[in-house]
Image (cartoon, rainbow, N blue to C red):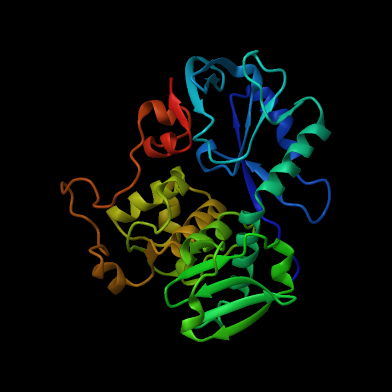
Length: 336
């Protein structure tokens, strides 16, 4: 299997619209073998570019900056709470802050260089993506049990399909999984080695399905009814507005792919990606019986109130900045 490259997600914070439009073409890789990048809502981004000219002040270790082009809306970025790679465009509008990583937004080479730095920092995510791609390829042959993946005598990953857990070596490279051998092992071999990065199968496959350019939605979800099964088994901060919209629609009533496209207004490629993520996260099913076992499966009578599913509640201030209430705080931002 040739190496599939992920589409990594970049949040541009505080950039004027014209400058964003100038920068976006530079997100396309200049050659084969490199990840793609695309602009997304900052809350679900893998990395951030922050417009240095939008900085207003430094306050108790946090940065105040204008949100987009709205001079009356300010964001507070807590650098200690920010949990992803960040680079600032130059020049910076404040003098009492020294950015660790900067780039000149007028120079394509500098912008691409920062993205390549991001790609190196995001190697664990890219390794998860590579493993997810190989699990998709082997989906029909994988059975409950424990699998060890090794490359040149080195253990890369442990996949436990009894407990639905995955552990990856912290030093695993994406290319290693193309050369890996798969070995079915006894259940006792499911213990995760020390220093392995642990996650769940649902979270691993979510990371893959939301960053691949392939359509990985099972065909039965395009032809028959789709039901809500449970809240997705991934962190709330990973959901964007489209995921929330589809979940709320399904909480009201099941639907086919085509009717859900009409009800949500989502284009076919976007709906397919959103639905694939929710499928791998265990949130949707094509089986009415499975849905009913969780208390879903039918249309809600009118006047029965809000659908019984716990999802992020969006507030006016957070929506203006592209964040749900909980996501907004967890990302290191607050409305100033």
